[in-house]
Amino acid sequence: MTAEDTGRLDEYLWDPAGPPSAEVVAIERRLASARFDAARRPLPLPARQRSRSYARPILALAASLALLAAAATAFWSWRWNWPDGAPWRVVVERTSPGAAAEPSQLRIDDPLRLDAAARVDIARIGTMQVQAGSALTLSETTSKRHRVTLDRGTVRVRIWAPPGRFALRTPSGNIIDLGCIFDLTVEDDGTSHVHVDTGWVQMQNDWGESLVPAGASSLMGAGTRPAVPIYEDASEQFATAVRAMERTTDERANRALLDRVLRTARPRDVLTLLMLARVSPSALKRPILDRAAQLVPPPATVSVDGIIAGDTTQLWTWYHKLDLPPVKSWLRNWRDALPWAR
Amino acid sequence: MIAAQRGDRDAFGELYVRFGRFVHAILLARVSPDAAPDLVQEVFLQAWTAIGTLREPAAFGGWIGAMARRRAIDYFRRRPFESELDDRHANRDAPDIALEAAEAIAAIRDLPEAYRETLLLRLVEGCSGAEIGRLCGLTPESVRVNLHRGFKLLRERLGQP
Image 1 (cartoon, rainbow over the protein chains, first blue to last red):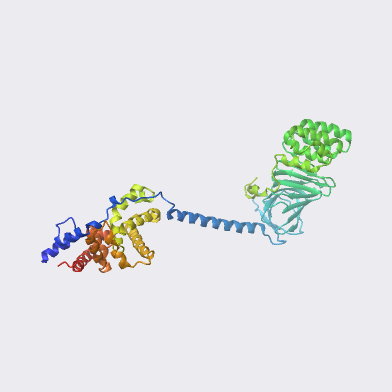
Image 2 (cartoon, helix red, strand yellow):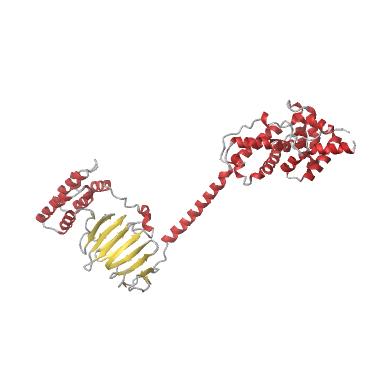
């Protein structure tokens, strides 16, 4: 093979569009049947399956969720755990213009008399806005129970915790948080007034108990049974008459008040009527329950006669059919844990 | 390329046409000529499901080339009772590939590894030296050397003067 042939061969090997080299063309022809022809072998593409391109975001999402779950678990544990007897943080609002808010502590069995309003952290489960002039004492604080004695004054409590974890002791009885926001005022004579914004509050003393749902209020005097709950939007005539009935033992006076109660009651007030019937003398139970049945008919399994005969289960069956928030639903009130909650 | 990553079948079909010969040559350098076309399709089907993971579109050639080489290794792993020698001669009954082509391919596969893919791309698939350089990531000088030396050895193996 001459140098020219070799040069032509190398050039043709490099560029098959150039002048052909006989030696190379001979082998090309020999190999021609092995050439791949995409047109003769169309690619049977299946529907696109989930490819690894999705794997990365899915993995990232899973990792984020795991991280979030770990953070939530850590926060959850931190929120509930509280060293036994550890003091609570108190921030007293400034008493004069220009004065700074004054940090302090609420210690076990160390009474706190406030001349100015203050914010008290209830361990880590909530806060309590305390009005000036209030007197309170921290009597117990552990991871599972927080108890405060309020001798007088007004507090606004915001709690996000399981029922019963926080309670206030007052001269008239206990105010037990069932997971909610509420206001409590203790007067100088020891009477406690409760108004509930969200969730439920239980008022309880040696004479009885009363469950107060969101939107309702109640009161409890020293040495008397806790009053029945009355919705804030009930008519004043209704509310006044109910409270008067609870205080009066004179039967004739009670009948006159009852007439006003039954006349002014709305369907929403059936809660009050049922609780009033529960604590009223036998003679008054029937008209109260009959009126309640007119406003909100009881379930088929419940009868007024049955309740009057003493079957309290029927009364509670009716009660639970009313449009009330479930008592054990504190988790739903998670918004109460937010600083900007009402 | 980007359209193919988004699931455009036509765009992926163009990639198949453009890179099919390259993948075929890589496989021909390793498996029998009758098995290679089926494996080409398998490689592209695998690429279709995984193309979303390819970050750099310009790297498609190197990416699918590596995929083809791995597929050839898997091909022999899955056929543990057949030797490579058997595989080389398995094509003799294949209707599509002429005997003389199969013999020439077998001769190329006996050459040093550096020359095999380059020669197959040039002599079987008809690629130019410049194309081979781009597809295989080789400099033009390396391609020229591989073609020159590889072709010289091939002629000797085929008994051509």
